[in-house]
Length: 82
Image 1 (spheres, rainbow, N blue to C red):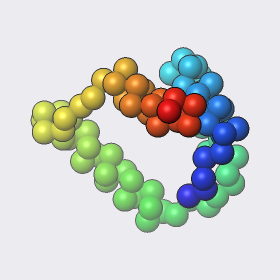
Image 2 (cartoon, rainbow, N blue to C red):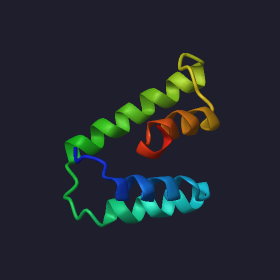
Image 3 (cartoon, rainbow, N blue to C red):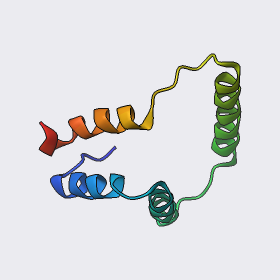
């Protein structure tokens, strides 16, 4: 994985300030721009994993963390936050 440059960190910080809908649209656009071929095996594996995670959430087996806490933790990892 590529190293996060200060420019990318700044973009990430700006992206995290967007609404959830705006973040989804941005992520979809960035992923679509990668022009990668979809590996059917990988797609099937992700779908199975998503199903497992949903089942864990529904059963209460998975421990969740609030978005506010996740955001706080991630922002402290950005270079400017140190």
